[in-house]
Amino acid sequence: MKIILGPPGTGKTTTLLNLVEKYLENGVPPDKIGYFAFTRRAAHEAIDRACKNFKLQKRDLPYFRTLHSLAFVQMGITTSQIMSSERYSDIGDWLKIGKFFGSPPTNDSGPFKDFGYGDKFLEIINIARIQRQDLRTVYNSSTVPLKTDWSRVDYVDRGLKAWKDRFQLYDYTDMLEQFCLQELSPKLEVVFIDEAQDLSPLQWEMVNQIKNKCKQMYIAGDDDQAIFRYAGADVDYFINLQGDVTVLNQSYRIPFSHHHMSQNVIQRVVGRREKHFKPRKDKGSVFWHRHSEEVNMSEGDWLLLSRTTRGAKQIEEEVRRRGHLYIYNGSKSIDAKVLEAVRLWESLRNGTKIGCEQVKIVYSQMLLGTQVEYGHKTFSKGQPDQLYSLQDLQDFHGLLHSLPWDEGLGRISDFDKRYIKACLKKGESLTQEPRIRISTIHSAKGAQATNVMMLTDTMRRSYSMWRKFENEHYDEARVFYVGLTRAMENIHLIHPMFSRGYQIPA
Image (cartoon, rainbow, N blue to C red; front, side, top):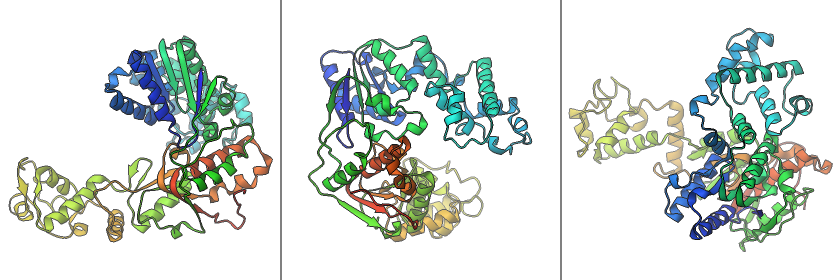
């Protein structure tokens, strides 16, 4: 087994795909190569890159997947057998959870109002399963805010099992368990495991079964970027893994000053795999601010980070107020069709003709009866190969006005109108991809940008407790390290807004 340690920006995924290419060149069939990533996004990225580089089709790479996807395929089940939000709701009703917990059995039954994904009871039950621990043990030691006695946790656990057995349903952890129980590993020539530092004990069982049925395995990761222990990841297993170790020693992302700062942070973690790598020759810049309003984001690409979802939402509110387009959690701040409707409408008012499909986009943001006549909203009489002027639309296609977009596109909310006006005032392009991405640090692992801004106030408590050197504080150091290593040129750190702050150790 070969272990590849990939510090931030050293091209770990590229290294793995280069190895894939070598095996393909040496005659290994694509369907005998396994490439298993931690997230669906990473798996899809690997597939896309492999198809592009190796001139393959997706169907040629059946084992380029997440581990959950592999279990699903090998079990031969269908999507109809997978637990859904609706089925969790059914379970809640069946167990009469609200009544059991002393609340009226209604949709407002306290903590079980939204029984399903994200529920604290399900979270603690799942943690025990993926960590391969006894539920009672996990309950007694859990940091999950679950203010109830053991009998209630046990009640939910037993009821959940009974329901799934009754209807032959599976959640995502069930699939991993069944994969291991039934020994469903495919027989492969070579296997690549990416982001292995984030695997849980249950996933490591899967990996070991896969390893026993393949000729060669490459395991890639970086324990310094292991930030999912709270979700059941077992970074210690990765740290203690035995094999031929290669350290990728050149970062193509991190400039010198960022490298220096991040190493001061991560080297305080005890028990890590020691690894040395070189930064870029560029010095890079580190800026400290008392408030995020001091950061000028009018140019360049930006990644705005917070330790918590709450902090990310605060960043979002400020960016919106300042009039910048952005992406948050993969979604654009304004629907692309809304922006396109604004652009097209103003083009019409300025004398430009637009096509049939473009007219439909404009009409979709207009009020029926007051801005466009009944019977014309879908522009069903429009000709695909014809261009239309504002006058054409008024004369023949039900358009009732020529007002500016903020008055004439009535389906756009006042909230969004104010935001779009702020963006236009800032000179933001309505046609280009947003320059700004907002994310929690956990969601940003693997991402990079020329400029990074990071809130640090939500980490104050963890850093004030560094001297205790407990596992959770090591984890916080890793989180901060991940944030510090996202920037290619400039990083802007926002001082804590509390009276008692902290300083990065020199």
